[in-house]
Image (spheres, rainbow, N blue to C red):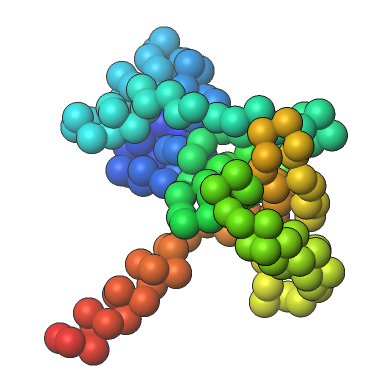
Length: 159
């Protein structure tokens, strides 16, 4: 049984998204993860093929595998390089003013300089002139999103 099959069996959708590269592997009985899936929701996660952007040539060693989330400034993808899992944030610069673009570049520069055990490390940052994006490669941290953490805390206070 692969890690993907285990995640599917446990209903762990976030993990499934990170492990989609294993989708075609078969277990000892010749079954794929989709054949292990119970429920339509998990099957949809397994067959969904997200459109992944092309990274600049200098970052071509990173292989994007899944969309982790989307926000006002861009999209965060799960990726890996040489057996190491990372998060890759792709920020679209096209829709922002030059002033905002400069702020994004400055924030990226600051993130790259930070080094603290309680802050996710930013490994690389690079502007991609081909499609007017800024790409940040960061350590990957799995678990609840900050939004989900806050909502859970609020619900505990209400109850």
